[in-house]
Length: 131
Image (cartoon, rainbow, N blue to C red; front, side):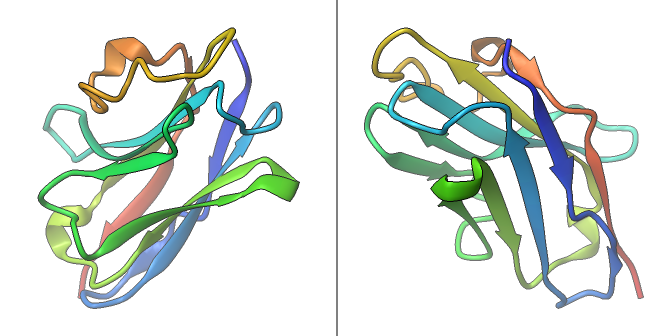
């Protein structure tokens, strides 16, 4: 398992923005599949955004499309999640998850938000949206 560590969570007002970072323990490449999940208080964990290294494709949950976006800082082995137009219902603990394969990672392409795909998980970073 490769280490992942999240950062960037904070308290913001509705309509605000945040940029979360997931520091990965190795170079992000075609053998990497990574995702952001979140768990609101009292609710189940849900996937919000993912990156399939073998295809380069990014996926977003319907609830965040147009507001959240993934970017990759390859030089720093970091996966970012830009959160914009934040709403109170975005309040949650946000987790970064990763899977490293021996070849091109495509296992997450069909079900990018199935948590069973991912073998490495961070401790989470808290995002609170409140006025």
